Amino acid sequence: MRIERRRPLVANIGLLGVGHATYWHQFDGLLEVMHEKQLKLRKKLENNSVSVIDFGLVDSSEKAYEVLLKVHAADLDVLFIDMLTYATSETFAPLVKSLTIPIVLVVLQPVKAMDYANGTTFLQLCNDDICSVPEFCNVAVRMGKKTPPVIIGTLEDDPEADAEIASWCRIAHAIHDLKHARIGLMGHVLETMYDMHVDPALITKTFGCHVVPVEPDDVMRQYRKTSDEEVDAMKGRIHSFFDTPDPASDSITFMLREDDLTLSAKVAVALERMIDERKLTGLAYYYEAEEGSEMRKLVTNFIVGNSLLTSAGFPMCGEYDLKTLMAMLVMDRLEIGGSFAEFHPMDFKRDSILVGHDGPHHINIADREPVLRSLSKYHGKPGSGAGVEFKIKEGAITMLAITVSSQGNLKFIVAEGESMAGAIPPTGNTNTHGHFKPNLKTFLHRWMAEGPTHHFALGVGHHAQEISSIANAFDIECVTISTT
View 1: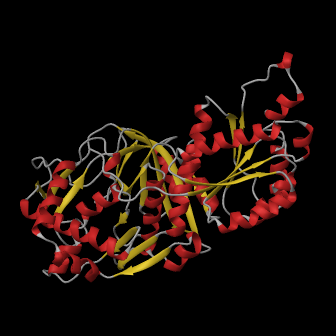
View 2 (view 1 turned 45 degrees about the horizontal axis):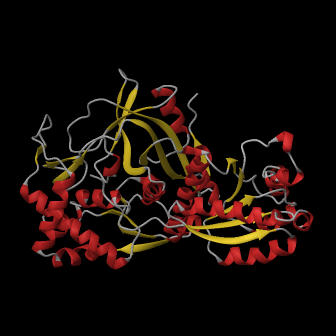
View 3 (view 1 turned 60 degrees about the horizontal axis):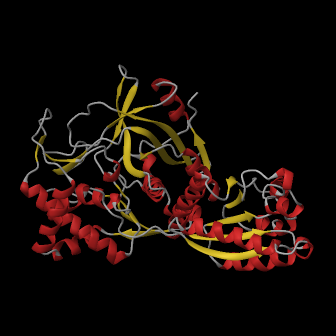
């Protein structure tokens, strides 16, 4: 079963076409063809869970400056420029100079090839989508910007171009929520984890989102209000998503105990109520509380609830790791998962390394029904209770670590690898055999050389390019580990 999102994905996409005003009185009917082309692109965009603001066709510098004001007011996440036919760069220069959002040039030619024997200037202009792209790229550089990404293909029957459009819409989903999120931060850093420290103001400076202080008492207040009916309903949800097998080789694991299930369910209800009350988008936390207290029982039993929430599009991150929470948010909005992970033992026989953690996890990327086990202790931390155990789906995977550079800025570190088949230890934690090219030792040396934190977000598929595009949108340094 797949856990559905708590809230739908959203993004604001701008669309404007460009052309050359001189053409319209020279070739009757050409302007109407341009409008029809732009409408087809708009419909493609609208199929990707985005709100499209269509700014029409810009064919002069006057119109470019007029539309710039409207674009600024629209709170866009990505702007698509439809290269309808040749257009002078006066239609583009004001936009690329002023805007800081990603601008994507879309070059979708109506026909795969012209009928040359019956060719006309009119038909050429209908298919001149690529003509001014070099000019636009040159102007971007002259305006002090990077050359814009370009989608090249045909307007119909081009799955590759459609996939690129869908990819940019996913990128827009991530950009939107990074800008507008309300990220909860509860507790404190686990003592001596210096790599976890980050100034919440740096998160706001970089992404624009707001970091909300959350007290453990905010959860406790909801915990005390939970009804037996709510807890029973949550237990039913938990049973529907998790297997509860007999214990295996680890002496600290047991078949899920009823008391642990009930406690986890009650905490999960309280978490959902608290995040709704505080209108949060994600939560990073770590808190220990007094030994033997009701508060310790509460705060050390987030694992099941936070895995359900993370899988429903509300990332939660333990050990107060605000940076990795943002990485998990990026991956979730790209619809590739986003589990909390770190390196576990290496397997030199298989040239792999176990990647996982004790939670939270994105259940939707599990290779099969995840497992719940009762743990008599959480290693390295206080408390006991239910733990979540599963492997990531076999196939391509991507890792994203967000760290702080020596200059004090956020930095993305990305790696692509493979999730391999193979047994994992039955410890009540997630683990996946990760294989990274060219070989394990070389990969690990390259990864460590970039100064990562010991945590990262783990997702399925190879998505380094999309993550790099998100980093570029926020002017963040992004390093992708070489595989050669």
